[in-house]
Every structure is written in structure tokens, then in C-alpha cells.
Image (tube, rainbow, N blue to C red; front, side, top):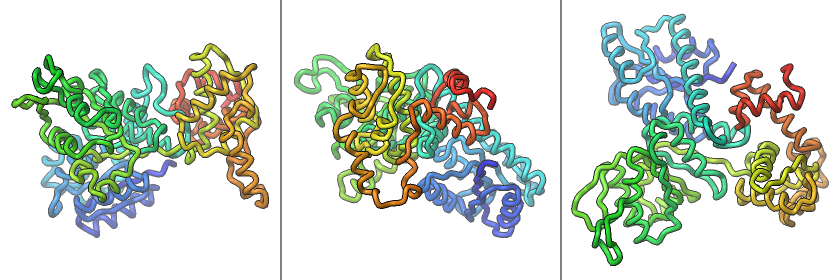
Length: 465
């Protein structure tokens, strides 16, 4: 059974203990909080470790932040998470009103054990269904957001599905080349704004004065060369999404102006004395440690917390090398179409070399290396002689360092399947096992369409599964 996680928020220790015992007997992992404020802290702590509650159970009447207020906070910080309310018999009307505002269901205290298990089971099924539907919606009509089946990429996909439909600002964290722009595109596609524009701005690519005019626009005569009014990116993204890449490079004066736009949903074009209302969702990305930038006084703390309502961290390629066979297969197909050249296989030594390299440039560097090898190849197979020296030599250096270590305790990536096809087959078999042979979930986990999965199952003789 899946690891189901519930957060119980109730100021009565005795009732929490009773609910905990019932749900743990039913296989749930239980987190507890005795107040709304503590519940938000628990949510933040779980986010730090990349684990999240699947369902929350919240008492309606608590000192300080009550159940309705906490419901609103959860809808922003953990959109899509079902919230089951606990209420006294005489307050059922309030619970029904809360359901109209987004609560999943309610239970009267003290909760009946059988009803408690049944309602929580339905809430979990609903949560799973919502995640799958959102993920499928995000992938319809184009390439998948990410290729891979590693736990890190699964977490990214899950967060895109959870955060996409919300109106919350999202901060995407990751090294250069990991795919931050892909995450922004996935969030926009999964949102209710998907039929409106996604406007992108690289804050590091423009001088400070030009960046301000690009973001907020200007009126005729605002400065030399402003011969006509020009709308800014905020206005162009009205009703849609504005993606601010490399937000850590934004100068301090512009940070203040951006904070005001986020808080008040209004902007002032350069040279104008009028404010303009904008309905624009902000998604930001950076390869910097913004908490360290805040501590150093280079980034506004209030702006950081406005941007980081939800954070999505993309793991670097060196942390998910088990995805290399799938990435190589996908990228070679795409690069082959681009360059009118088909690569049918790669040698074991080629894959060994790729797995021995740490990829400081991440997937972007991998794509460049593969395109170079494809162009230089004189056949439909790729060998290590086509790799640049720093990649081809990394494997030998790693093996030299481990020459005195017993083979059975080496990293799993030291041993690579005999061919790209075998690597693909093993990855598909593993994904099928992890997803209970459910083909739609397996295709999602692998980052491929169901039709592609069907083709590969037939190709590798796995259709009987």
C-alpha cells in the first residue's frame, strides 16, 4: 500500500490520540499539530524534507487560527490537498459552509472509527486522482516536462501538479541547465491561466534601466528615445503568467517596485502618474541561494517570502544518474530528428563514460555532448571515442580511485547495462513494478506518452505484463 500521510490539527490531545490510533491501524503515517500556527510550521518542515501530507484533518474550533482560516492557508500553501474538518454536532452548518469553500468533507466529534477510515480513504483517492489528472493535463499536446523516473523528478512532477492550479507565486530553485524554464512552462500549462500568455523575462540578460522599462512599460516621452507608449511585460502577461528567470540578479531598486506590484496587483509605467491594475501570476527562478543573499543584504527579505510561497527544487543531473538511459534515448531521438540522422544504439563504454561524469552543466550539457557525438558519428552507433575528453576520461579516473574497493560495494552506476536498449528495458520494467503494472502511471513516471510506452512494451516483449 502507498505511504499515506495525514496531518491532524486539533487542540485536544485526547482526540488526537484516538484518531492517531485508528489511522495508524489503517496504515497511515500520522503527523500532529495542536494549533493552526503549528500546522503551518509542520507543513514547512515536511517541505524541507520533500515529504508532504496527502490529507489534513482540521478541528473547526481552535484558539488562535481556527479551522476556516487554516483551510484558506492550506489552499495557498498546499493546493489540491483535501482537508477534512472536525466539528461539534451543533456546528454542522458551519462545516457544510466550509465545504462550499473548498473543504473535502467533515466529521462530527468524537469521530466514529469506521466513518473516519472511510472518509479518509475517499480523501486519499481523491488526492491521487487529482494529481494524475493534473499531470496528464500538463503533458497533453507536447513533450513531457521531464524525462526520468528518479525520486527527485517524481517530486518535481508532483509539485508541478499541486502548485499549477493555484494562484500562489512559485520560486524554482536549481543549478543552471537543470530545466527551471521547463518547470515554469509546466506550472503554466497546469494552471487555469493556460489559455493566456506565458511571458518570460531573464533578469540577468538586461541592464538595470532597460529591465525596469521591459517589466513595467513606459509612456511616450518618459526618456530619450521613448517616442510612443509601450506596455511592459506585466501588462502583456495580464490574465496569464510572468516568469522571472534569474530573479537573484534583480537590482535592489527594482526589487522594491516588484514587491509593490505583487502586493497591490498594480504597476506604474515609467513616466506615468497613473497606476495600472494587472492580474498576473508570478513564477520566479534562480540558481542562487536566496536565503544567503537575504542574509548578506543583497535581496529583500519581504520580497523573498512573497516569491517563495511555494518552492520547487530541481535536482542536478549528478543526483539522478539513474535517469541517464532514458534521457539519452529521448535526447538522441529529438536530436536525430533535428539533424536528419538516426542513432540506433550506443555502446556499453559510451554509457559507462556518461555515468562516470558529474555533469556540472546538467541536462543542457548532456544534450550538447550528445549532439556533438551524433554529428561526428559515421555510423548509427555511438562509442566513447565521440565524447569530449573531460567526459570520456571521467570514468577511468573514477575507476582508478575505486580500484582497491570490492566490486559489490561500488555505486550501482559503476555497472551499466550492455546497451541503450537494455537500459531502457530495465528502466521500464522497474517503473512497471513500482506502479503496479498500471500503464498510464508508468508512462507518467517515465515521462513518455502511453502510446510510446505501448510501443516499447511490444518492442521489448513485455506486453504479457
